[in-house]
Image (cartoon, rainbow, N blue to C red; front, top):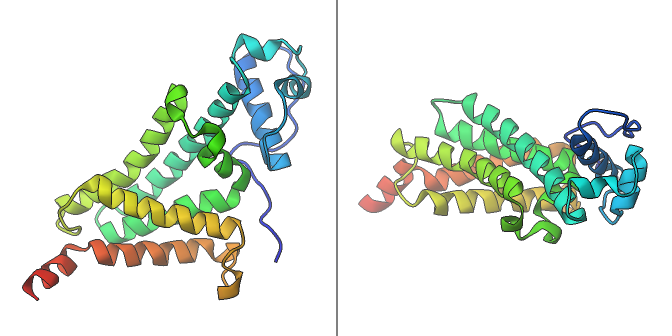
Length: 223
């Protein structure tokens, strides 16, 4: 089965030589293009500078090291992921079930469409997000979309009362695991391909919602 083509949340076209303007953003965009094309980030800052058309010392005017640059690339990914998840949630303001399914589908779709970027966002290279405030903030804002859906579900009586962070952790673990399995082509034995990603993500979200449903909890309490 062919592996999914790596696409980035930004343009994957080679960066044009830098002449003027926002050098910092030019370096971030260049690094993102390289991550996308190579499917890895074992390049050096010198290679990023050469690709961007600037001196080898130029990146150090904006980034302490390569990790700092990669953190900004990952932060862009979280910002894009948050936006698509938020749009999915806002598209279903009255149905907690559909909102959770939509957010899950948006999450999985992002990972499948941008596998290299996704791996960087959640990889060991940047596991200590506290070292990178911009990345930490972008990650937290993305998680807040999910907790917001669950909070609204509890307020409307559709989701059973409980610790929202615990419910969000269960939901995030589900979609993150599904995304990783799809990217790694680990579900082919079930006949599941990356082309089925969104459908299976919605089904998984609805299954999770059934477990979180306030009605389900009510029935159990009476039993």
